[in-house]
Length: 456
Image (cartoon, rainbow, N blue to C red; front, side, top):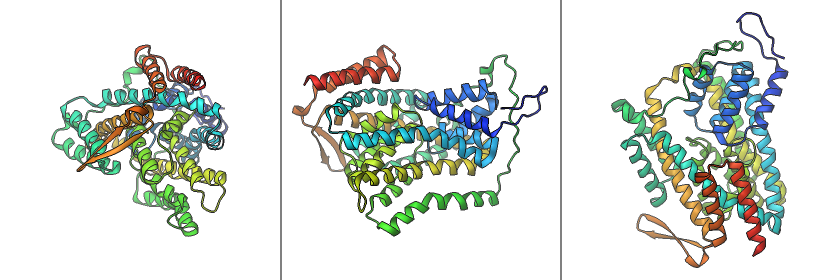
């Protein structure tokens, strides 16, 4: 238990209480980053009072500057504050664990029994429901960052670049960051538009909590070298082993390299990188069939943990279909673990490397401008994702047509599925008109989907 004191001196959180609390946070972390951060705030700040509102918000703003899921990184940082490296590993690891187990089980069921009518009927209603969730993400991110003409222009150019010109997503993020960093120096009022989460006024008249006991760690080159010397071999070691043992053509090596690249450009939430992952997984690697990304996204939306856990499903299906020397099920499990490893180990690396810099970076205007511009570009990317998912969900036959440098999608009108359109319409009504939550929307659409599927 926590040691309570009569005065306001720092208190010590026991290892046992940390285990129990972070396990509780992990099991309740549904609803995407907003819901996960709200759960963490309620338990860590309001109930346990381990850290102050101000420190919580400053840490969250720092995590937003990093690629990867900000809620998981925030948990890792708070765990690091309490118990240093082992605390960060505990908090960040437990945040991932329930979703990892749940999606692995669902992926096995999907791969082994996906052809059965019951499973087909379940996912038949789930896909159109996810469309509404993705569209809601476009609007939510857009409201947050599209504050002026400069940000709107970035979003439009981003959409044109990725949807029509097929500009690679990592290059798009890099260019947006450069434009924002430079623009923030010359026109900070136009580019540094992201505001911090919350303010000191949110606490009202509540007294500040008694903070956990911690010691400042100075950011030094020696410490950065030591952290890198541990994390980088752990990150790239499994990829190198896969290459040495199975070769460049191995699906495990390809997944390790691809998802390592994706982990370094996941700014603005998981939706930003999903279009890139979906298109590469379907068109370049053959890991998924068209429309299956929505099935995986539905799994991630309905299980605890970060939404980016959907890549575990992609890794499982890719290895299941290209097992190499293993049987499909074993290969799928190894592929899912490889994908999860290279997706989340960088998150721990960024936190352990940058944690001592939190107070220094939180007021850096140029970094804020770079992040604002990247987030504006993400609006165009997520809009691309929404349109891509919509076309491939409503139509069963979609062809690509090229006019010089332009790429367009040409769905065959006769392949339009009225039943899917009905479910998608219900999802849109529930989300935008009747303002129902995600769980209600998914449950209603799955029920209607199963009814329409079996009615056929």
